Amino acid sequence: MTQVNVADAVAAAAVFCMGESDEQTPLAIVEAPLQYETRPTVAHRNDCIVPLSEDLYSPLLLQKSEPN
Image (cartoon, rainbow, N blue to C red):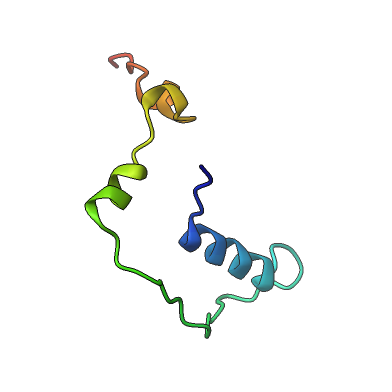
């Protein structure tokens, strides 16, 4: 199953439009409204749960920090 993070995609497009070097425009205005076809159900929310075995960040999140 493919999962798309719409907010992350919009943010990446905004950073691209603002420019990261010479242009450095301080903000981007997204004028296109985002519309979803249906409201999420419990089944849809459950589909978004990623098992720890498939989570790319789980090794980082599960590391034990050393005490100071």
